Length: 444
Image (cartoon, rainbow, N blue to C red):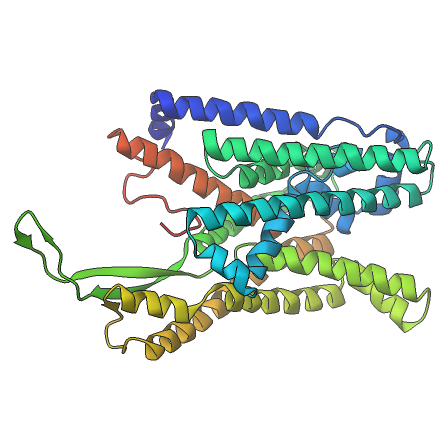
């Protein structure tokens, strides 16, 4: 593998892509450190320590995915997330609205129209979310906002919206001229930028404060290796469905026989979407219940729901993850369309009649695979909560032991390595593995 990495820099085109990617990522990280005018940084840090000193709650969760921008209240607080949210919304709507479905099937022209609609929706989400950040900061105690008012509101909305749109543009440049998907790379870099904090937390816990034994540290490292291996297996896992083609192709005067391929049905078809949907939904419901009831059973339920280590939170969180896993598969995996495309292409599944029977077979197969994928996703999602609740490990450390963070890091790393390996193989270099080839999240 090390020889493969050394060969990467011997290819001029690939070396240029890597340097462009590193430079653009550095620009994004710089934006994440530019402070928002009118915010008292010291007061904000004091509030963060008081509100989420145990590493729990939506503040730490969102702070991780913005690369610490929320904790410093920078102009890059929204980061790439409005664009990601808009993409998810358009992707869901394109499975339900006929006009968007038509655009999706029109090829490159339709994809460009959908991309333009996504950008317009991104601007709307940026304005709404930045206004929400203004209301959030002005409601904080301790004088976090120096001079609240209309001027601060407009300035913050303009700064945060402009910064988020700039990061979106940088992500497009990384996709076009760099290595891999720009939006995914930016999110991964934001998450991994918290790694020094995690290492510092571990150093303080095990070597300075001695809050835990060295045996726990060794077991934690071994458990981390096991969790990463399981995450890779979940991300890479596919069920191969054999496909036979009845067409014969003629080339160079020769007639070739039947072609046999396979369709890879991914075990984790949904990726990180169920966790992304479930976590904010729980926090929104909890905040709404707290706003409605200040005491009583409803208030106690809301408090338990917002506490990520409570049994109530873990139980409802698990149910939501399973629900959103099947919901995403139901909206994005269209067995009827796949069956029709196979029929038009002159292909069929061995032992299954074309048409409706094929659609029912694929739908049943995907349902069984999704059960396995949902269980694996559920285990990875609740590992950080169990480590926090049972061992009292800080969130900055356990966030790398599962959940959205680990799934994104593993998925993006595999995609990036696959891109690099494809360049190596084209130039007749060896890949990163001695046997086989790397597959990204697409399963290719």
